[in-house]
Image (cartoon, rainbow, N blue to C red; front, side, top):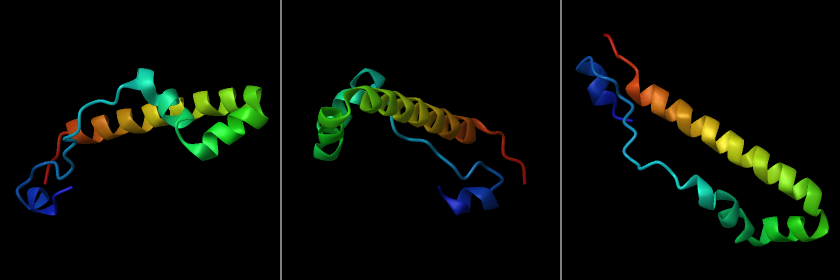
Length: 74
């Protein structure tokens, strides 16, 4: 976010990161101790929660893309 761009009449939000590798999202979660302990104790519920977390992350990323592509008028 660059507020100086807004003064120039440009979109102040710039998304400069590459799109995440969604295929590795749940593997990333499984690499975190807090999530692996959840997976060990409640495998079915954890699987559902992992999917919800991935869907939510995709939704947020798509929202960031939408904001970055928004036409900005002063």
